[in-house]
Amino acid sequence: MMILVGGLLAAKIAPTAKLATLPLAMIIVGTATSTIWVAMLLRQFGRKRGSHVGFLFSFLAAFLGYQAAVQESFPLLVATGFSMGIAVTFWQQFRFAALESLPDPKLNGPALSVMMGGGLIAAFIGPEIGARGQDLFPHLPEYAGCFVLLAGLVAIAVVVFQFSEQPPITTDRTDQPGRPLLEIVKSPQFYIPSLCAAIGFGVMSFVMTATPLTMHEVCGFDLNDTKKVIQSHIVAMFLPSLIGGHLMQRFGVGRIMVVGAILYAVVVGIGLLGQELVHFWGSLILLGVGWNFLFMGGTALLPISYKPNERFKAQAANDLVVFGTQAIASLSSGWFVFTFGWNGLLLTCLPLLTAALILAIQQARLESRSTKSE
Image 1 (cartoon, rainbow, N blue to C red):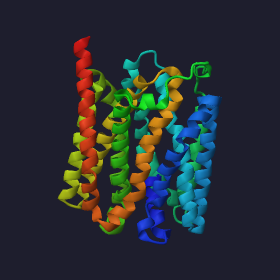
Image 2 (image 1 turned 90 degrees about the vertical axis):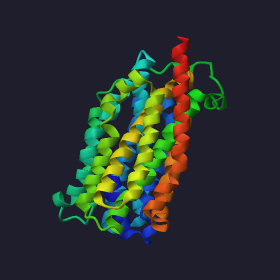
Image 3 (image 1 turned 60 degrees about the vertical axis):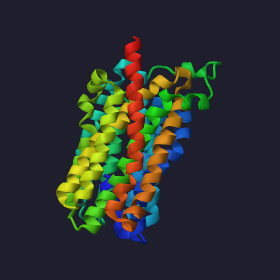
Image 4 (image 1 turned 180 degrees about the vertical axis):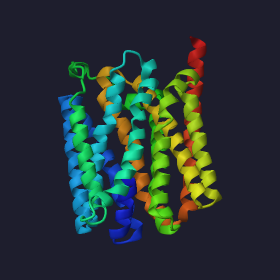
């Protein structure tokens, strides 16, 4: 919803067009800057109790977004993005909670398939909130109704969340502090999945954040076409999850991440061919699939890099790398697209995609050697 509405509302009320992506970027900034304290909060109070703080930030984001639309206040919209980013930090921890409930790391891929498959629902609900909020609340200022609907969805999520269960946390409250964080992050088991996920998220955010602005503000596509492209992108982000876990089990996580990096290169190629609707559609669909393979692969591999009593600090470090990279990408996206154009933005991604491909190949070779040794 924020990808669609946040960018368009910002374009309407921002003091300059180059700041139009700032509210969306602040989602990532809020996520990146809260990874450490959120992990420590969840460690102290448990995932279920601590996650209620995340829901409070969700409600705060909906309230601030409503006020930003009513008052046409750009600072309030920026605050909306930051509050939503903190909430996202809590949401992202749900994936680790899912993996910790499994008896065997080999089940990580299929479990993530189920977990991330829920994003398919968001792919339809989110943009529809943005498109229909005005119709359901015609008496409200433009886009204000979207945030009313968002608050309603958060309320439903709070109710559903009460049925979740959590095993007691005991491994983190022992006298064994675990290895130093630097020792953990220097191992290939950590830096390969973490950097692949970071590059995947960063490039995806870099391109996706600029897409609504390029289509609507630069190329003149209407809101409906822009919505459909974003919807298709989000579907493509999560639809592969239905089979991604099984593909990882069969072919190996490293090979799937190699495919993800190659798909990102194809995204750049299609985007450079033109700026017609079909080019945006093709690029954003493949961008979603490539993101899924890189991010899901990195997430599935990460638990191998740490012991149970190291998990919160390792997870926090990983999310700091991933969402810190995404924050930089989001903050610079608007400036890049209005300064260098769509093609310049795409070409900037190539060095990062090369790095992701090299890391993914390294992971595939490690898995191949491990299989031969067995």
